[in-house]
Image 1 (cartoon, each protein chain N blue to C red):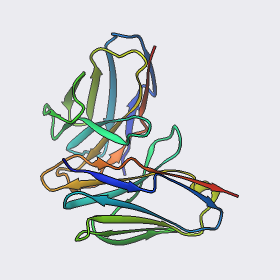
Image 2: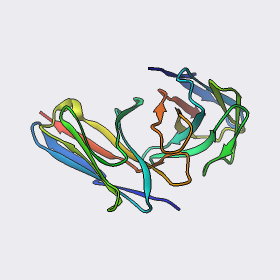
Image 3: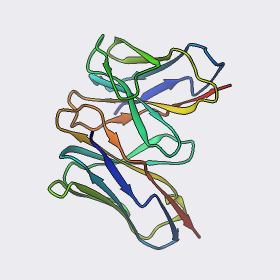
Length: 113
Length: 109
């Protein structure tokens, strides 16, 4: 078995601030994902990465940057936090290929004041 | 684009009742997962079920690829089953999951 850890668990920022969320996995999975969860809207894909140094945009990539410098880690940056923004950011990983089971981390809850 | 329709949006049950949650997909799928989430909690994978039927305790998942649908059956519901159930599909050529908006289940004693 393996585990996905996300830091921080809670993130409070100011409008316009640049904020970084981190994700680590020890499954040795090739593919990692960042999803955003808003109340009542399910999860939407922000970025994913199929291998180290690879980045692929999802439907919600505007306003975000991502970085995959190591196979085990995937970072997400909110480039300019929006006032009153509140969402949960979930990191996931899977073996190579979209048909494989995805495993999720516990999430980072973002609040922008 | 690919869509996932999940129903019902919410469900209120008396403890001991059964329930059936549905997901319908707009395109052919090649993977399918059901997740459970408590308010403020993390996403717990219940089933990875691309086709056929799988059972775990009181939960049963059935995916029928030809009909582009999947269901989650809860039998003899308990108060601890309360929470949100999410389905998600993977599709041919895609890598990420497409999620439904969830079914919120509330089980009262």
